[in-house]
Structure formats: structure tokens, C-alpha cells
Length: 147
Image (cartoon, helix red, strand yellow):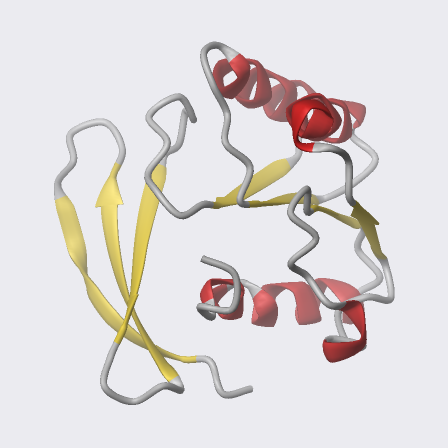
């Protein structure tokens, strides 16, 4: 759900990559990301807002190109073989991919899956890490997203 704070989990990583001038592509078909609210992460980031029907293709092309270190997908529903194609494109391009979705997407060939929910403190997220292959929980952590 837009505005739920899920992006707060990766903002520290995006800040670090921006400081190092590493290239990042953020694919946001729902247009939920507001660049003026995050000027510290926008330096070396390319923001793409393709129509939802073309977003999976855009993510695949960005990952395969090998010209960026990270592709972040915001609320991109991958159907059928799109998840497998994206995984192969990321391998071919040597690109890391982070998919932030409302629901778990079984089509994404992930090594780890993170489930994010809130705690009573709105500045803190509960992050549960599970292994994708066997579904074994690796633990819960509190993550401060207040900045």
C-alpha cells in the first residue's frame, strides 16, 4: 500500500549508493515515489514510470543492461514467466533487484524474502526474513526508519 513506509527499509541503501554515485533504477508504475521528499537518494537514480503493462519489460531491460548496480521495483505485479525472465536478466547483467510489493510474488526467483509490517511505534518496522527455497524463518528484527 502506498504510504505504508515499505520503501523506508531500502532508503538507507539508496542513500549509501547515491553517496558513492552508484547508479540505481527505480521503477514506479503507480507513481507513488515522490522525489522532492528524498533529495538525498535522487542524485544517481533514474526514476522510470512506465505504464503498468510495460513495467516488467522496463525492469528486465534495466537489469540485463549491466549499467546499474540496483533495480528497485515498486508495486510491480509480475505474472507468469515475467519473474523468471527478470531473474535471468539480473544474473546476465550482474544487477541486484529489490521488489517491493504488497503481496509475496511466487514468480520472483528470490534468495531471501522479507515481510515487513508495523510495530506500535510508527518509526519502526518489523522485518521477518525467510529463505525462499524452504520457507524457513530466519528471524524478526526491528528497523528504525525515522531517518
